[in-house]
Image (cartoon, rainbow, N blue to C red; front, side, top):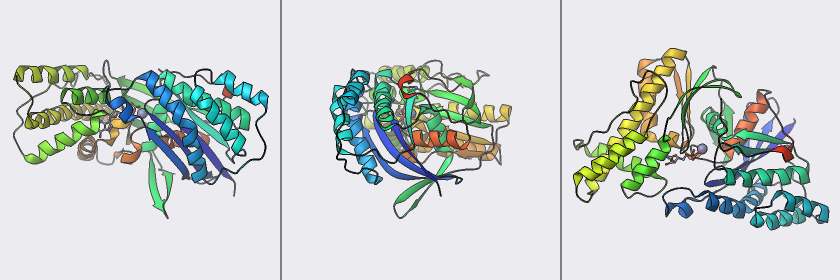
Length: 399
Ligand code: KG4
Ligand code: ZN
């Protein structure tokens, strides 16, 4: 049985992720052999958002140690007796001109270990913060050229789409992912810190965007409202937790926030208005926020945002007659969105399936990047690229 192993790399924002996945030819599932993830949340929390220069530096410090950990977990690193020639050292230096921290780690890796049994390297090339993306891309360039392994460039948002479309099983502590039989076209609702969009997906690699936010992304709005409420970054989980506590308290809601563009007749979104309305509500109170105020505001905000997302998604299901909705991106980890969207769609469109990712894979990670690469291989829309021509594209779009 021929197997295929993919080493995947994710550095588009504030998570450094490396994973190793193994697929057996002809089978629809893929097993996770090794996974390592380092979050920069603590680093950025003090500023309430992600600082690109700091993110880049943290990725450059962590990426090779994480790669080593994931490859060791996968049982793929074996000690080497040969050392790296000067030509290769020069080559690494010429690629990693701004990542000093990474150069010595890479040289060490090549001097200590043999080339691992990896068939493809998958790397996020966008969208995201370009300084951060470059770290993963430069690491991929070096590994691909020194070890002579083909590279698959991956769109981060495709990673979020694919992750919602697989089901995870765990046997003997080993996780594997099966691709569900999906009826295309799918409707993808992508909700993260940088994106809010509705996309019709005809196949992996074939997308048509039907609407997007005109200002803030929904995750960004959660983060900004969290800051107003004195909650830590990232704001989504913190706001959602307070909102849940408020709902279960049964207390009457004293605040009302707008639902911008809910009846706009198109598929675009606007979240900066809800954010500003939250700010004015706080200002108009003319006193310090109590814990009850914070809980009520968090709930009013989450209710408004979720209602807009549901209405626009349902309108798209109706117009485009899609049988499956996949929800991806960090905000897809929001339990209230999952519960409300699923029950609304089930009631209004029986037979339409709504898929969310495993909560632990909703936010950025490298498994999603390996899964997207595997989906491309499966659907034969695989495109490998000359590693030296890889470029970061912060605004890379699905369609
Ligand atoms: O996909 P992701 O990890 O990174 C980007 O590609 O942007 O998404 C991060 C965003 C952050 O804005 C975070 O606050 C939000 O997703 N988020 C949530 C939840 N978990 C993460 N928003 C609402 N509810 C959540 N449970
Ligand atoms: Zn993301």
